[in-house]
Image (spheres, rainbow, N blue to C red):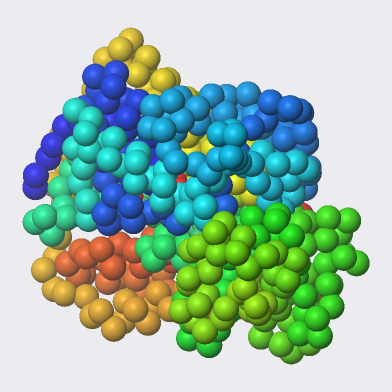
Length: 518
Ligand SMILES: Cc1cc2nc3c(=O)[nH]c(=O)nc-3n(C[C@H](O)[C@H](O)[C@H](O)COP(=O)(O)OP(=O)(O)OC[C@H]3O[C@@H](n4cnc5c(N)ncnc54)[C@H](O)[C@@H]3O)c2cc1C
């Protein structure tokens, strides 16, 4: 088995992982940066609406908006860190260094937009392709930075810990300590080990364990499953945010329709043209996401319609084409001209508010294991995330985790043992079975653990998933490893973690909504 050594093993090259890699490498640390696909194949690249930047007028109001959106469940210390430190992290990397082409007013000032749950305009954006503008620039910077080695297509399989993966029996009595990961090498297709002083989980969220999702394929909570298997603490996993507006069409792709459209005046209507949000929340169509998603779900259930509509008639056609070129084009490809007709929309799984529990420096309860970006959970989002806080959290959590790790590596020595060799069977797993099982996970989660949950539905989901986990575990021990098999194994585990968290919490709050089925 090939073994390589590094200072920092960063699993995930979205905005969080890439920003961490830049900080660590600039301090002279060697970084191995893994990703499932190419530099821009991450959810970070798909972000449309923007990133919060301007909090100068009334910083307290952002803190209040985050707390309100979270249904009172957010961690005040995490909010304080984000509000105070986030804009500086944006300025340093995205504005001063990379000079990203955010939209500007004619006078040259940054153009500010607003999204659901925000009481003011404070979000900067690059048309409706903000994530792509940011990540393509950050990725180019990563590629030009010494000390960072990218491993595209290399899939982390499991974390290495002293208690599980060495041959020295005494290691069993050490405190829970991570020293890298087993990885399926993208080039050779064989398992290898990367031994690291610090291991950083930046694998994004879990949207793709649900049948309808805004997330990229492969986003099945790899980091949550790996962390769980070594004993890391996970919190708030029942709080899965469903984005209210994803394009709906028979056999059409599920692409997101940014909330910024509603920020600019679009409103939700039902099949009869009624603005149903006005009677539900004082902010109408701009209410927090959990409230809007449930209201849409309720409209669909009561009317039997397969979707509701986003009415853009308050926006001028030229403005729509200029400000939202991506959405305009994608809807047109599906036969909907949004300058003259409403957009059919449904909710879809979007963001995991919970994750691997960390302190404000990204540290988990496992020594030398960090979690950042959407994978980590400081409690910032509580029971529901405020729009456009996520890219900001990626930059902030990456910066603080890297700073703490740089100091720790400079001050301490690390014992890095040789990992046990990985034995991989050679029989190929049947791809049809893997696809079928992944489909079953996604359907089960959508139908029984989605926008509206009940004890009975969750219990059924658990039963199905437990059986599936047994089955998948037998593939896993008998068959040659592949990216698809690793994805399936992690998807089942992550789905079970969400269902477990949902069953333990009988209280409806934020994105977790339970009805009584007795
Ligand atoms: C369509 C869409 C629109 C959004 N719009 C906005 C917005 O406007 N503003 C905002 O703030 N947020 C937005 N979000 C949320 C935000 O984009 C994400 O929460 C954020 O980008 C997550 O970044 P990340 O770095 O944590 O993970 P990601 O960007 O998801 O990156 C995860 C990385 O981990 C890698 N990976 C995963 N598992 C493994 C493994 N086992 N081995 C190796 N590599 C692995 C992946 O290949 C990828 O490189 C949006 C999300 C979506 C899906």
